[in-house]
Image (cartoon, rainbow, N blue to C red; front, top):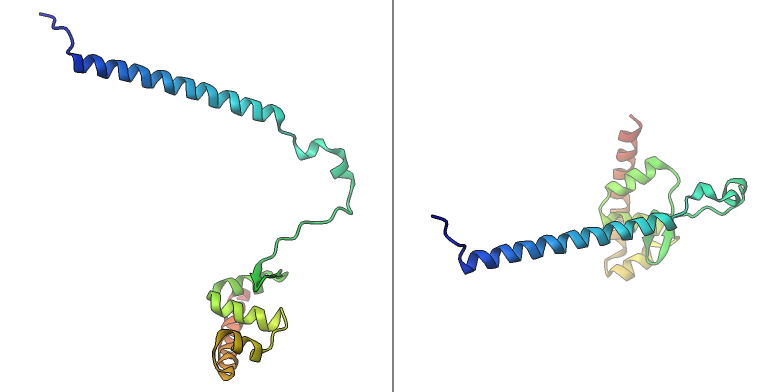
Amino acid sequence: MNQSPSVEQIVCMKFDSFIKTCLRNELRNIEKYEKRLRSRELMISDFSLIEGKSDIAEIVIPDFIVKGLEISIKDPDLLEALQKLTARERELILLIHFTGFKPKDISEQMNVVERTIYNQHKKILIKLKNYMEEAND
């Protein structure tokens, strides 16, 4: 004997049908949107202005930003060694060697004794030296 589906089963089937319709419509909308985007995209090679010009300024992205100052490192070994340091060590080295801050100024900002800055600086330089020597081996 064939039993007719219960009310609960009918509701489930209607819900499933509704969800499938919604998903189909959403997929269609996404495909239309992507097609519209592709039709509006332009390739950089399409512009003859860019190919011929060699004096266009390069966009330089800084490697580090310390105290609002942008610092770019050109030596890849030094950059790699600096990235291995902790954030505090890196900040100390960059402030002293790349921004011109004096250890006295840094000690006042960090609320530590000036001698501590000198000792940390010396230890960090030894670490950097070791990292760079490992990179060259």
